[in-house]
Structure formats: structure tokens, C-alpha cells
Length: 233
Image: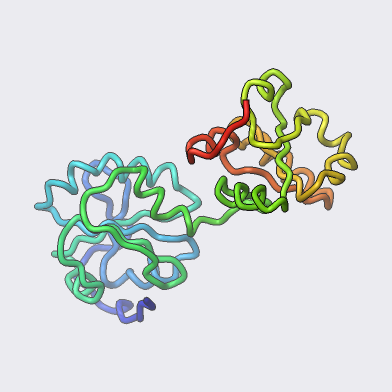
């Protein structure tokens, strides 16, 4: 659903720099909705709320925490439906709290009711910028099933022997750069993974700068297990 403009003039709320009492998440008004939300280069998570909304107050710590953790990747704002009724009417907000994700000037998703930080992350995740070469667990599982990828475990041999992705080969992280030829002789696209994904992400970025792109598993084996995907032991 494309959202049309029309909130660039006079409005009834304060500016987007107005913060909730004791909080850091800004309120967006009708006059700055277009600038702060529709034209945002980052995906925006909006919490529609009201001063009298008790569930809104109960989940405020989760909203604040998610805003802090998402800084630089996504924008989190609030809209008071009593102070910005035109926005609430146009977007058909019928109860609070309601959460809505807007990216590229469009409503991408919405959930009615109080939600926790994990659900906020799930709403925004599909619209976050991804690192070059990053693969999610489900994407890698699909590639492995079709023989299009080869999982490369970069942990130490002891960790590899204890638990690993199905069919994975072991190349410790510190050996990868000296074994690139061997890496690219594997059947299928090599996909690096470590415990939590951070180390292979750094290595993938380093190799990309040298003109040697190598994919990696976001979140590492921990993310794979969290998805309930199979593990070899």
C-alpha cells in the first residue's frame, strides 16, 4: 500500500524532536510525518499510542530498548493518535498500541496490540540493510538441500567435531586466507560460518575488499540451531 503525502503543512502535534517523558523515542506530528517517516532512508517502526493507553506504558521499556539497539539501522518513532488524528484516520488506526513498519514510502507490515522487543525485531528485520554476502539460515538450508552451497565451519576442530551443519567441512578461521584455492574447489558456493556470525562477517568483508567475495551465515551456528535446523554430531 502506497502512502500519499499531505502532511507537510500545518499540524497539531509537536516536532519529531519531542521525546516521551523519561524516554528517548521521538513523537512525530502531522507536520513532520512526511519528512521523518515517508522520506526516511531507513525503515521506520511506528508505535501509535495515547497518553491514556496503559498497555503502551507497559511496553515502553521494550520500545526504548529496541530503538537503542536499532540505531543507525532502523528508525523508531511514536505517534499520539489524539494529537495527530489525521494520520490515525488516514492509516485506519482503530486501537492502541498499533505497530506499523513503513519502508520506501509504503506500509510493509502492521500489528495491533502490545508486543515485545523480539516481535518488533521480526517486523523490521526483512527491511534492514544486509551485509554483502550475508545468508540467513533458511536461505543456506535451501542452497544446501539443492547442492548449490558448501558449508564451511571456521571454528576449531574440537567445536566442529562436537556439532556442525550437515555436510560441513572444517577450515579454521585463521587458515581461510591461505586456503582460498581449496575453498573454491568445493562442490557448490562456499558459505563460511562460525559460532555467532561476527567473525565470518568480518572475514567476508575483508576478502570482499580484496576482490574475493565469500558468503557467510548470519548469526552463525547459533542462528541455525535457533531455527530448529538439523545438526550433525
